[in-house]
Length: 106
Image (tube, rainbow, N blue to C red; front, side, top):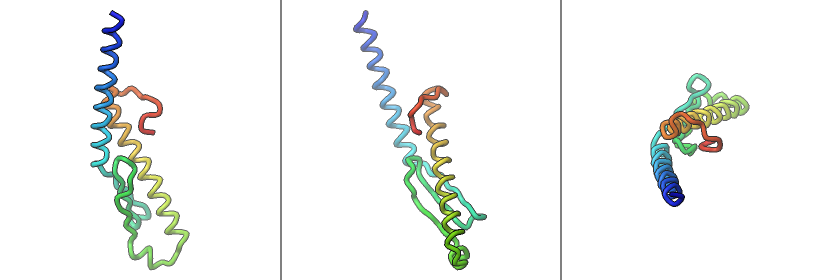
């Protein structure tokens, strides 16, 4: 009886690991786009927090205002990472049935 419980638990862990891998592969294919400054800066990232592209409007570049540019890029980067984290948590909740597991996709 002891062996059956451990075998079952091990099988469940393997199944969970396989599903987790599937979620990570799926996140690599999903993208999140964020814009700041009325669309003057756009950042696109995939679900693994990898930046796919950054687009800066010519008007912003022509302003020659480094501080504004830096602030808009910083804001967009922070927001895109927040959105990716939310996306990952949503995907994980499908696997865990809404149960929040600390440390998973933080």
